[in-house]
Image (cartoon, rainbow, N blue to C red; front, side):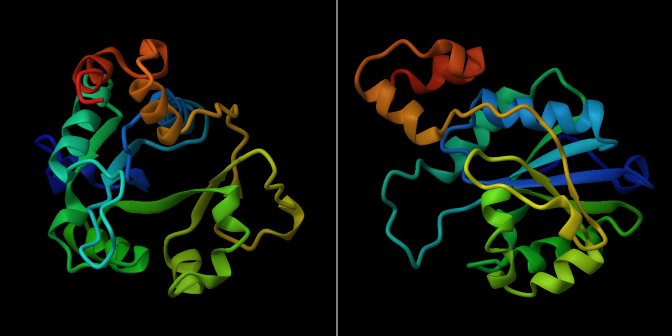
Length: 199
């Protein structure tokens, strides 16, 4: 689901792929994506909600459709954000390279690049088909405290972006809600209204 998007309107556009559990989506996710659109030459950011892996324990992961709906509520009103269930329709588990290849097949005239944190970059060589991701799609790396990246050593098609660090985690949000805390300013208003009754 791409909120009415079609291939013609996406022709030639640079799309940042922000894949995650968004459990739930919070202001840190949105502020980063906003920065990429407004300061780093990204036309749109697509929030690809990662489905539950049936081979793993559910743990604290909220329902797939609920997490997608929360992202949809969060991105309403900003035309450069899209909520996507694209990965829901791929074989599971799906590696990032498979998702990116499927996106390229579906939108052949669109340029996709993957958004990851500096913590993931430091172990990126262990990702499946890491070299292909870099060479065929490229990476935008955002800073995470405690995970410094030497920008002089980055390969072609990999770029560090200097977005402000907003250290909010979904784990913190869930724990705070469980404790009955009013954390409305850590979440988009419509998301907070939805999730505050779930904990």
